[in-house]
Amino acid sequence: MANPTAPSGVLGANFNEDPSDMRFSQLRGLSASWLRGFLPMPEADEGLPARQRAVATLLGAGKQGYGTVLSLKFPYQGQALPAPGSALMDAELERVDKVARAVMGTVDILVIGNEPFLESRPADRDGPAVNAFYEHVARHLVAYRKERFGARCKTRLYMGALNHLDDPGQRTAATRRWVEFVHDTKEIEGVDIHPHVVSIDAGQKYLDYVVPHLRDDQKFLVTEFSLVLNWREHLRDTIPVPFAMRYGMDPHTRVWELLKEAVRNPFPQEKWNAFLAMSPWFSANAHFLRDQVQRFRDTGKLAVATYGVVQADAMVRNIGPDKQPWLLNSLYANRTVQEHGDGTTGRNQAWCKDFRALQRQRDHLPVRTGETAT
Image (cartoon, rainbow, N blue to C red; front, side, top):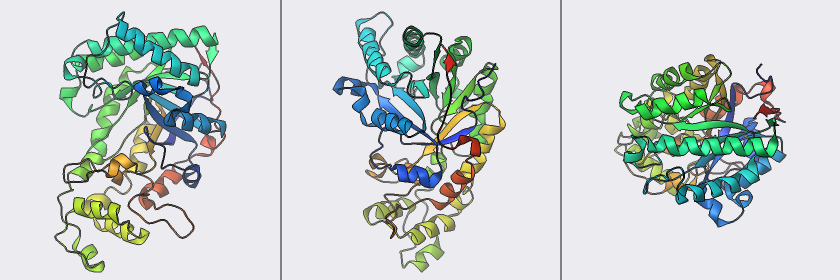
């Protein structure tokens, strides 16, 4: 029987690996009750995991009653994934154990992997190596949880996260093995997806692929999602003429140039609002967040989706016509909009309004997710 307190249909906030610009006052302004971040596993070598930024923020959030999701990131783009039974795998599992000691039984959801098919070499992701590595880590964590907590534990285990499922060429034997492993492993409660897409219909292709592979008692996570691929298509567009005339700007200015200027000299909130509202490529998608979350919820299989909360430092470095414009996704436009007179940071008004409207009474603080069978 399903646990009535298990997360279902939740929309929360995501800071990825860098919570330094995020404030809990921002989460309160959104009525958010869940928070997600990820930990690059090499950081486990740099001291106690509980003191690493992402983990410390999530542990602190949990003490305040927030639901928490931690993804474990294994960055192996530049070297082969460790093989089960190897010395390198043993070293990786030591890192896993250090993190598990800090978070198991405390965070609500632990995701085994961040973006495994992007954070590994092409030679590994197209063959069995990526599956063998993550399956071994998953079995290790399943055994760890059982040994330390017995029959029940607060922390639920998911496998994550799959990318580019809207591209038939990326739905490979390895991704098929991934979802089949999730289905066949009773201790795993579902799979994570990251639909960064060009349209809401492209996001639907993720659901069409993943949902049929879930058991009746499983759900999926969406710890990242956005229309960043749509925004990128318009970086070389010129800014809207009415906007340029209103603010005395050169109408030949490209979108990417305006973004760079907004980072260099943040706009008043009204000017940022006008830029987005007058840009047809954005205004036509102003309710993407609302509509995409509704698609997730309509499946009846969503556990938690989390959306980017702030514009982090990495988003505003080296802005150019070919850089992914992640900064257009964030709920708070803290690096492109001036602080308000009351000290609050700028915001993307469309995203914030719909985010708040999507919060349900049953999701409000404090979050209580109960325990799951181990």
